Length: 285
Image (tube, rainbow, N blue to C red; front, top):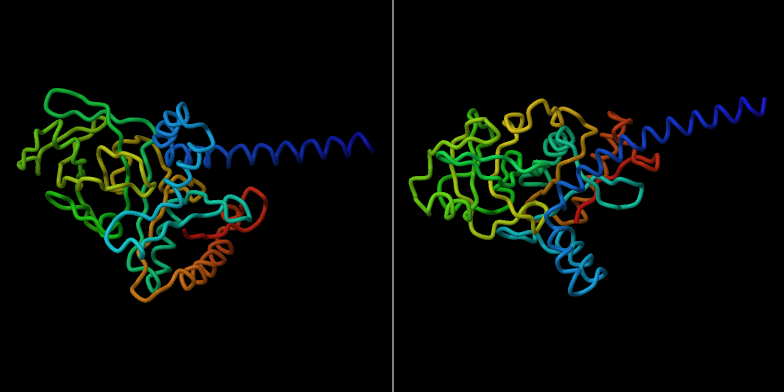
């Protein structure tokens, strides 16, 4: 009997470990996408100024520093907790859509963004360059409070594959030519049309990370063939940013998000149970 009980305990622990490993895989991918370029910068700093100071710089860049854009005091970063504490975690695209649609009374707009994990191959003319790419949700530029320096940002609904390139790419690859708008480029083998040039200094939803090209979420699968992460609620690889409505305070937003989080936990208990076995929470910074 004791041996049978021990076997049952080991089997339960195995299932628990396998579940934890699956969740950790998704969480690690999210954190890597959010921080890989920042970690490289921090590693360089660590050589000269010490690891502790460097890690503080990373935390400041990702969480503590005010987000860029017009009226930055109205911008908040939103996280889904990994544990029952307020430890920040990434969000899934289905959660983003639900949260955006459920919080229109509190937020003027909400957007989401995620780095493409591996560099993309961008073919311009006859040459291919390795670049960093970010997938962004609807209303990205409006939410961030930034207007493209040239051309336009992304529409709420895009019907064709378009791209916004960085100012650095515009200068280095197109020589600052204003006629870049409408130019065709190829990203990971798929054709895109340049519709805008991002303003100098536009940061990402993750703070300090560099982006060479931004693509609308509707066309993510063109550069990530076979990836269905936008369909999976457990794929927590996006970061969310919301722009508070005028007159709405942080406390009001937190209270509203608590209600939304409870509703999502009731509707999707498996995906909305954190790594400690407790309901996930929505936090803002």
